[in-house]
Amino acid sequence: MSTLSDQIHAVLALDPAAPVIEFEKTWTSWGELAAIMAEIGALLDAAGLPAGTRVGVMMRNHVLTAATLLEIVASDRCIVTLNAQLPDDRLAADISAQKAPVVIGLACDWAREPVRAAVAASGGLGIVLGEAGGRNAAFVAGLEKATGSDLDRTAPGIAIEMLSSGTTGTPKRVPLKATSFAQGIDEAGVFEGRGPGEPPRLRRGVMLVCGPFTHLSGVFNVVNCVASGRQFCLLERFTVEDWVSAVKRHQLKVAWAPPSGLRMIVDAGVPKEDLASLLTLRTGTAPVDPRLADDLYERYGLPLLQNYGATEFAGSVAGWTLADFKEFHAQKKGAVGKLNRGITARIVDPESGAELAFGEVGLLVLRSAQLGDASAWVRTSDLAVLDAENFLWIKGRHDNAIIRGGFKVQPDDVVRAMESHPAILEASVVGLPDERLGQVPAAAYVLRRDAQQPSDEALAAFLKERLLAYQVPVRFLCLAELPRTPSMKVSQPDLKALFEVAA
Image (cartoon, rainbow, N blue to C red; front, side, top):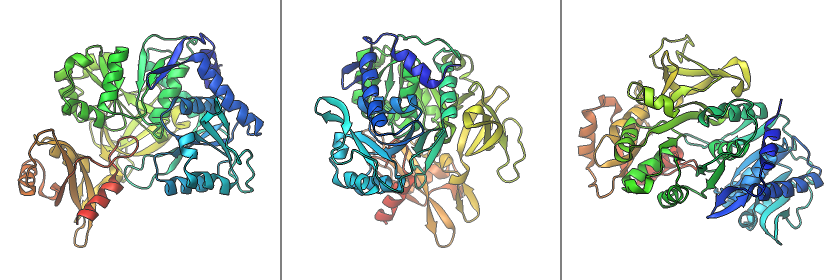
């Protein structure tokens, strides 16, 4: 039985002259990609860092970083994700804490003195990508050997130690088993029309990858594209202008964007003719308001196919196919899709753990080989509804509820009500400490283009018609943009800090 590594190497060898990655409007061929990977692998081998070695990667969306990730996966080493977007001191602190024997990054990040100093202080080895005398990769001068006495060198059987997005609190690093990651790639074949164990081949069409490598979806999409023989256009980050340009340039039939990006596309009034090549849109990272999906369908005639997953799941566990959308969308509105092949789910009472009937809201638990143990149920933090046809609705996070004087407020309920206001493009709700009630909800929002800001009193009155009294936020904050994590989710810790500043 072929492994994910076998699959990647087999695809790389099919047609070395054919293009695979477009980055900054320049194509890299399969042969060039294989050569970059081989350069990186040779440096790791020369340094005596075998399979199982933990390799710190300063993550940026770049073709050289993509090649690095592919080489680490294909050589059965372990990716330790380091967020290069962090300020110098925070990135340096994470490098010091991880104690990886080797750190790889672009030249721009090695030019950050605190970052370089952190690797040196830990006794780690450094590899620089680009700007290396014409080579794609080279040892960092002065950091040619891993000499630290307390380095955390290996993580056998682990494909990625992925830093979570930190949407609701301090980011944590989640170890993903190599078997689970490979299983997730295999299961994703249902969305490509690819069957398990299918022989490697190059496919027609280009996939757009604009999710950040600091999020699992970014890494997953790169590996999935290569393993399935798919060309892809890699964006450094999501912007409406670059996204639309890529759609037009490649005449894409399918394109992915985060939910916040889709809102920006609608609000920017992108002309329908600019998206004429598209047959459908895909999204993930967060549940989508059904009204946004309706807006996209009415304005552009494009079905929105979302999926649902998490870092801990090593990929997606549910999603929409176009066939399912055509057959079920009207009666399954708001669902994140149907459970993927090989995934079993049930809904349980959060307190007792008792299984609930179809249609009831409770805590989602999952079972699959993709999650590490095919016989064990994995408890999530998500409130969900499952129906008899295995369609799934996500209703918020159980651990994100705001307890206001004993009453439970689900932020997603308040957000939906906020975003039904004609002036509001996007909203987010957090719990703030209150001496008397414990917590109270507070809402920040972004206005639609050319919309007039409602007064706090008018907004509260609007919400009182749609929510229970205890659900109505006690404070409002109008922002030019909401603070975001690298995966473009709203950062609740940063939003709470803005309320503190405003106070």
